[in-house]
Image (tube, rainbow, N blue to C red; front, side, top):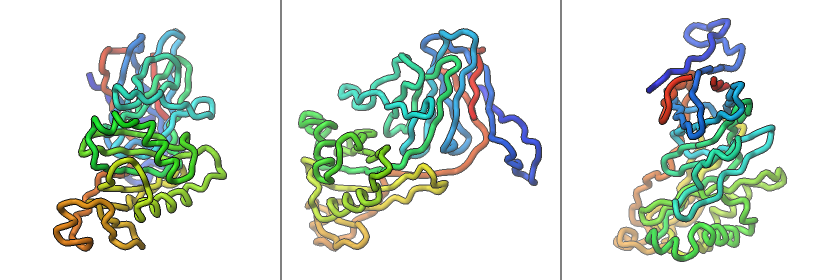
Length: 302
């Protein structure tokens, strides 16, 4: 079943656009017994900041909300003004642990598919906010099995932290998938004294000079920075492509020898194919697709 959520009408229109005198609200009726799951699908890119509220007289009700994003920008769930940590990483599932519907605000991010999941209960208010973060994609010459048999994400985080001289708690693995091994991770911090720009510069230097030890030969690296205040799309910078340094301001050194970059030496042509994609548009329409149940408590999206 598919149900379209329409925003309350604005009081004034400026030609085709609303006057935006108030924030858009999208009310809807939902059926929310234990185990209910709803997909929220947008006709455009989801707004950066959102507020979800489930209203019901039955305090036992709750549901899992799934939002598919077109990009992998760093996001957080906030409750009562505080960030709610994602579920613990599950080495068996190769992603963050599944939503168990244990408490309001329980959440996880499914990498590659770019799906944010969270659980909300009656009279609980949750907010989605962007985070200041350094987002990095690295592709290594390793098999999936070799990566996880050699410490997996835990050892990877320790290696990044050691190379950059930062605390391991600031590094969050977002996704791991094959091809050879592609890993996306964020560097974030709630400490306002931490200079993410300085860390980004240091990380670029470490990759571009061959001083980033990740336990396997590095083939590709891309980096972008997301901001909690910016309204523009994040720019993706290529640091290494095909084993050759492509970072601006650095010589095109061969970090990892491949058949491609050795045929023509360090100056051989290396196609710059973006693996990390960041897009943004705006929308005022949501569509709800129900996964398990049909019909009636209400959920409000602001």
